[in-house]
Length: 424
Image 1 (cartoon, rainbow, N blue to C red):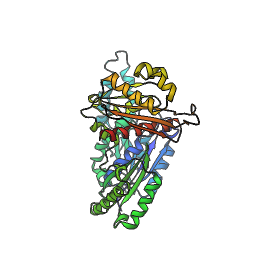
Image 2 (image 1 turned 135 degrees about the horizontal axis):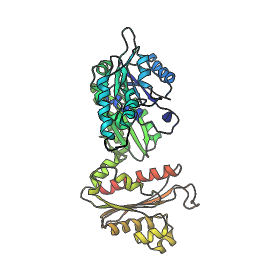
Image 3 (image 1 turned 135 degrees about the vertical axis):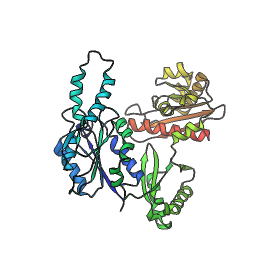
Image 4 (image 1 turned 120 degrees about the vertical axis):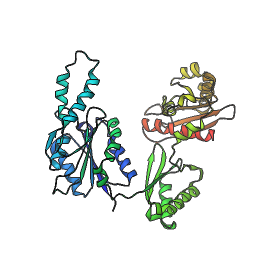
């Protein structure tokens, strides 16, 4: 059996939902990439008894490694290090060298604050230099160091990696944790897997499920594949882990999906539609014209560094007057066909081309809800247009399920796939 790990996310603000946990999923992906089986992710508040209960639970599951996040700050409720030390049967000690490193960090942070009481800040942060005896220190990314703690002699417990809560600090510290001898020993039994991702757009989840059931019956070696499927932003994502010896079985699965779903399989190398559109826009000058999506398509296009090389800009023309004044849509067209129509979507896209001197434009106009629908155009009705040069535009009207957020989010995915197809 491969090495196993568990994750303990601490913080009352995470437990109550005031802050969304980003660390647990990120660490889960990193562990799976390493070939370490993930047993559980648990979330608990900042109470020491609750933290220790989670550590004991995971130890009882036979994990080799536990990763905790949060509770490393200078305040009274930052108790993770103390709790982990007790769990591992170790005393805590003041690390003088670490205290000096923290002092230098704080001195740099407060150097431009002449009225700041540095001695008070240093005293408050002294707590961060108190670590379990024998622990390996992970240098701070912010002001809080991480630690790797092994159980005291005679205790059969997992190694514990204690990481800070801010995702930026945790992610930057993770490679240092992996480089320690203690973590290497804890995950020495890991199984090295390959991981591949296939993405599809269009088919229903039920169609994919039926296809995988058929593959299980027909494809030799299918049972050696660890397959996870997920509906994400209107797309189907199929993630497969397998040992190197099982690569032929994965190739058979990939061919099976291509034969069954054809062009709906748009990515077999893990690339997203956003990646592909960014590559396809090289050499083009693009613009957006959005109504119901309120700039979300432009946001996706600008998520990637370098998008200024191909995106000129966008217009959020929410009102009919804005459609006419900013994009030149004929008011008579809106009066005749309605703002939610392919006629208006095309006029918006052409208007964006003119306004920005763009050769590519994408537009959206629809009824995101919860109100504003009609029998002819119920909530969820969205019209799209992609115009490339002077060629006939790509037009589409759909009715999307879900609430307002769902309709808007799904609409951006459709717009991205229409761009991909038009530019291909």
